Length: 260
Image 1 (cartoon, helix red, strand yellow):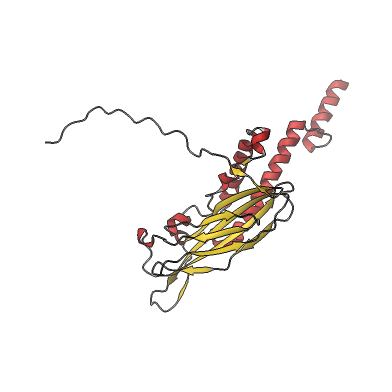
Image 2: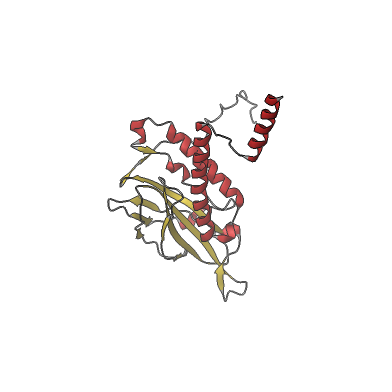
């Protein structure tokens, strides 16, 4: 009888979460998940602060999943490899908007470099290939900004640091020219640096007298365009990643019939 009573009481206590000891693996898993959630939350909150009209709760879950995959890939590295390589580049290309990205709004991409002074240089190409893209008839200009958010990977709950560019306005009819700006983020001992590109179409109204930023999701993009992982002032190299499975074998349909 005493055994049954003790078993009943133990069950009640576990339900209430009292005196329930987690295994070391469970503690580690919960701690890691908390860190990933904290990092994802910081990134997501910054993204929607930049582009509140693109708010999408599913993006947060996507970020957590991608960060978990990034962490798992990092754990496959040997101790020597982990001192040199990072899988943070898996975050590059992540888009807040499921309906539009930088590549759907603009036919060219900027270049990002992390220099010896721990600055991020953003360079726009001289030749922008405007003719390769069709733009809305009422397009008045394209607004471009770049933002950097730096996450402390040692203490993810610590306040992140941010820096951004002034808005740049361009138009497909502009004369091509190269432009460059430099961003100086504040770094931590181990930093995850995300460079976010924002592109927005501004449209004329129907009578052509006024223009404003479009409210359409098709004309707004907010993407993570580049990542840098810096540890003790040293930039880690991007580890090679495979985003897609091997292509399927081509089916054999035989010779087929001839045309006459």
